[in-house]
Image 1 (tube, rainbow, N blue to C red):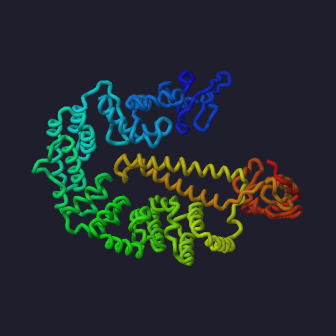
Image 2 (image 1 turned 180 degrees about the vertical axis):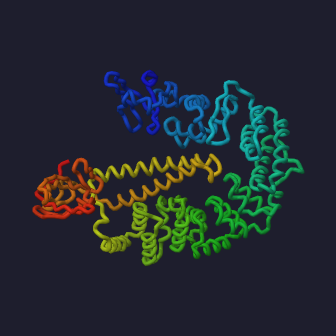
Length: 589
């Protein structure tokens, strides 16, 4: 009744629905879902699969008053957040806000700036409690509190230095709106100094991050750190390894950490050369920039060259190299470097971690293969092509895409690839090709698309959420999501291979001179004289209950290629049947 009255609902899988008609006589309601307009739902079944939502729910307002919602988002950012919080309650995380608003209400390119303004309005208004973690919900408070009071209360109640740092960042951003800066400095700076000193040896990365956060806060409040306050040099003086600190720090702090290490350690160039194999591509770039500015570019080129020649360069280092292909290190992008990339991708995808940023980049970058094969001998181009063909890094459609990029850069290589494919085909048995109808092939492609674009991303999101639950060794949700990931990845590989092998045919054009795929075959059991009529169809069109069988089944294989009057044998376990082909005609769907 509530659904019929409000006119809107939510489906667990299909999302928001607009109820357009309710027929109590037939017991049906019509619901428009995104991509599924006019979907009929049985009234008795509706409460089990649908959740009613109010007319002022954000999704309902998007459906009925998009212009008004856009105007609200433009003029009163915090009012939109209030609507979302009221609509989703404990699910109203910062990620949910973005999911709801982009791109329907706010363009993706404008969202970052919009969200910064919205956060500022929420802080100043005093009615919102914005969490520091993306997985926690935004809360709306009926009674407002002064900004300074709220921030200092949050700072004092935070448990430990790690929990305090996001609040320090909030205070720093809000410094312009704080009324009593000296009092804020008195409460925060001393406490931070105390905790930094206690973490310098036990958690140097956290201590270094806290030093930077404290300095930013002091500057924003118009104060200076005291003479006895701990500084970056105190952290590095503990002789902690650079590789143990920089990679685990927030991305925004890593460059500053490198600069402070450079300033106090004479052996920093060698340390940076060792670090490039242990950090993300972006930090590799920052190390390269600092080394280059100090005159150590040749040493860096020599180090990377040795790593490439020994196929020991990690994926992130090579990813930085290919992204910087027009820069000072372009001379390193050679066919040998591509071989090192294949080795790195194989290492990255050899265990449960199947994702590889390097592989994804090579698949999407339009100029990479042109760059590494530019100006080289055609025999070296063939070597690169052969390496791609033999590698397990790219499969199915991905391998075709990569080879296509090679052909685009070097059209003359097409004959080499085609000749190789013919040789390969000659060695394979005929049954490696799947004969399918065009309709079933299209259906399989749609199923594959849903798997890749919806199910696998949804599983990845489940894994990320499960990580937040704590210790992965005892995390049942994480283990379940990872097991599901294995199933989905296996299914993806199988479907991709099947689609790659599939050859679509039109049943209406089937040759009926023999029992081919797309024919109706009448058979007589020679021993019992019983007759049966079956449709011999493609690999994915079988339906035994309706006398439609795939040509890959035992019976399909037995009669495939037979002609009228011919007798064939069908073995089913210990039983052998002798069947005679009486007639063959075109299959009519």
